[in-house]
Length: 294
Figure 1 (tube, rainbow, N blue to C red):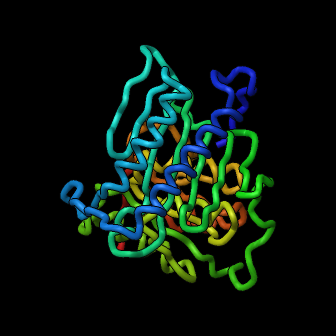
Figure 2 (cartoon, rainbow, N blue to C red):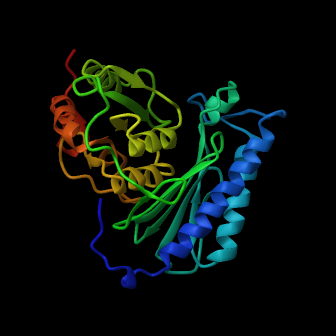
């Protein structure tokens, strides 16, 4: 996931874009934190059990307003508003997830995050994740590393935490379109869970990505993930030292225009990746097909 494109050739000043994104994410986080004590106005979103609240839309409007003020020509893809066009031919695209973990918030569980990513020609070059609960923010520029809340370089630990050498802690994430009767999802999740000490299902993928980037967990398996929150977390973890592959073991290319079947992934600390792929490649096949075996 590292880019060899020199910074001078990039169409925007990425340090400045990072500053704008961090400030927007943190302002949205403050709005969310202030609103958690009041009525949430939870409404159904689609038919798959997902929900949306007034906080989602308010935080999104705040972020979009700041991005529009700083980059009026850029396109924006927002979780609630959808595609917001920019100038004709514009290649810079922002992805905005104003409240990743709305279902958690709706049941009173404080596990959620704000995520922004900037893509150049469909390729993610910047990611920002803010945790309103702890007040911490992580960010990464492609090819230039990841930064933690105190501005220092974020790197995965050199070795797994004691007791986790052979018993990793993993997270599972899947897209909203995945139904409870999806046989491939069931088989993949069950197979991976048998190979780890614990499998977390956080309902907030961005939180899982920050945990991987810090070394709090050892890997993530994603099945048909949502594109709006994927780039911000993936670039953060990759720049912190995690490695990503497709479920079938092929190289992972994270682009916002790639088909959903090619966005499923394994992300892990480098020494664990091959072991996870031994499991996923028994089920996944090139081209996004799956071999279901129980």
